[in-house]
Structures are given as structure tokens and as C-alpha cells.
Length: 104
Image (cartoon, one colour):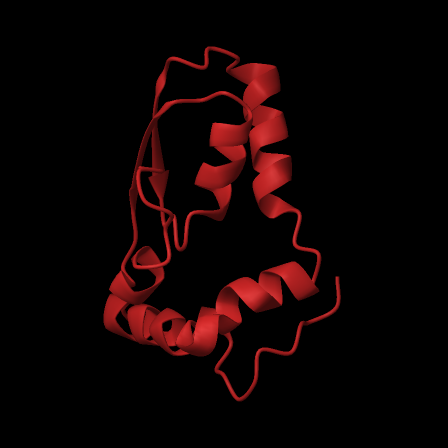
């Protein structure tokens, strides 16, 4: 897969600590750029994740912890698939601010 343009950013694998990771995503979230990029790139990761979960863990009542949930893209797909007991966490409070109310 080709590298996507996310502006003047260091590659994720070069970030050295959690503060750098948080700052990376906080910066990417300015003007909702993260979500706009995901939409513009036709990012299918959340849907593919939920499709796998439906196949291997179909119990929609099970407790799900979405680590690194960001702005809730996977949580939205989970909810659309009928999963209801969702919890999420992320280093970036700015991304968490974009999570739809009541999703987690």
C-alpha cells in the first residue's frame, strides 16, 4: 500500500514515546484533518475489523475495549453492527473529543 500524505509528519515508527504519539495525533486532529483524511483515503480498517469480529465473536452483548479508539471510527462500526457494550481509550484527548456522545 502506498504511503498516504499526512503533511509534514514523522513516520509513526520513529516516534520514541507516548507523548510524541499523543502530540502526533493531537496535531493531526487539527480542523478534523484526521477524520477527513480517513474518509478521503477510503480507509476500510474499522469496517474490516468489525467484519472479523462478527465472524469470530458474534455475541453483540460482549464487553469490548477499543484501545487507541481515536475519534471512534471502529466504535461507530461496532454500534452499526449491533454491539452495545463498548469502552474506548486513547492517548489523544483531542481525538477523544471527536467521539460521538454515548458511543463508549
